[in-house]
Image (cartoon, rainbow, N blue to C red; front, side):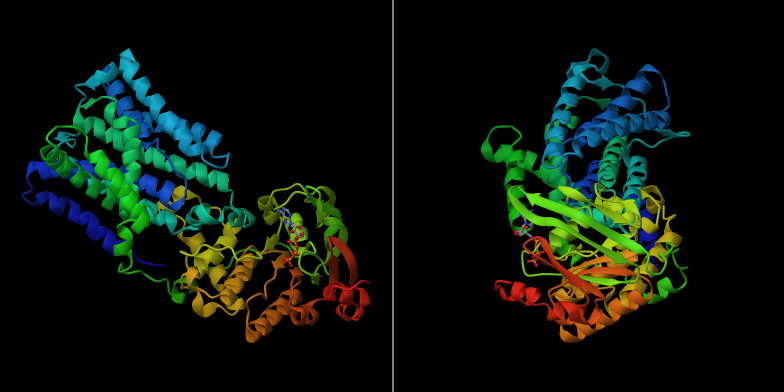
Length: 589
Ligand SMILES: Nc1ncnc2c1ncn2[C@@H]1O[C@H](COP(=O)(O)OP(=O)(O)OP(=O)(O)O)[C@@H](O)[C@H]1O
């Protein structure tokens, strides 16, 4: 496995070394604020940059952490080391409720809800007598480690920055894991991830929770560092500013979070001095500069400043050797010879007045390759999507190995052993080929986010990656596994999709135009792979326009036209059918 241990240890060792430098207190204080902001922006990078979910309410979670420890330490005398956990529990519960309600709905519900949440909490803090209204709470006790006050100056710097780096490493670990691949698929490949068995709602709620907990830790530290809390740093303005930091630094990069926090803090201080002098009157003019800067960054450098560094950042590569020691994954029991695996019974799909699939029926047996062919617009892809749960049936029934699967979600269908590829390739371009394919084995692992962050998932991760590597070799892509998927041409992209589908250990494989974009030799290799899979007892439903391939590999074929089943038969029977010829030539039959 890739070894990041040494660079990480060096980075951690640098923290106390920096503290030994004769830094003026002003700069120590600046670094401390940057560290506090970085904890919040790290969570935002995971949530927004990587997961694609926007939250304006992170400052409110910082507020929960700060006010919980402030109130409890002042009123109950509880140790700050205990109040942290109370803060985390309150933050966790509110993030779960907020996430559960808003993340089930598509669109802009989360950003809107987090704005409302930020505003509500700000006014709540500012109007409660127990929280000191807008004056806040004063005289919060220091954070003591034995006799040592770690909430001031350099000791705080060391404690805080060790935490910042440990949190950053935890996120890097998370992203390089089974749950991490699912999280990285959320932004652009949610539908595909569901088809691989990923519970996308759970992962969305999960990253919302992690980001909120990071913000809460920042608030807890902030309260003991400042010794006083009032609502101002936890309002909507700060919610927006944290987002600005993440976007400026590079919302898709863990190190972008720290870059953004540092630049914002440093610019803010300079601008707060410079601008009133230039304009001749005091005010928060830096906000205007930030607004203009945000527009410019979004327009000219949408991936943020860290993207410039990332181009030259050395990337550790997994070598094939890494995977050799791993044991294989368990396989699901194969259907018995010629067992009926799929029964499609009078399935129908209407889009308004258009009948895209009109009471189509057929069945498939184990170890059979069934072709689903027909002219453009015949209803093949719609039938395919009805079987895989992407579309709901208007009427009819689909049975898989004796169980009715119509009405189940694509995730539930994937769990039962049906894997698929997509007509328009769906992959995550900024993940390697190997990682994309390993996403297909999601259901064959079980390690969660916490194990991934703590690197307790390595044995399972090696098995999943080994499986992905094996499937890539199987489709002739063994030499390209470490490339970024976004750099592949169309042909290899299709092979990637087949390898990913095979990673799910399916008993039934549904391939939607797998030969589209492949060159002759690649098609021949594909035909060999399909035959080999059939020998292994796999059933394959193939939607394909390439007649050579279909005629070569299919045992039986269903021909569709205008949403109806025109005929079913062996390749020679279909080839000789006048009705099929007429359908393809567009003549009457
Ligand atoms: N979401 C949708 N809303 C409305 N009409 C749709 C939708 N999806 C498909 N259709 C229509 O249903 C019909 C069947 O489409 P489908 O994509 O299943 O055909 P196909 O045989 O797969 O075609 P192709 O070979 O071009 O992919 C077409 O007339 C298409 O325009």
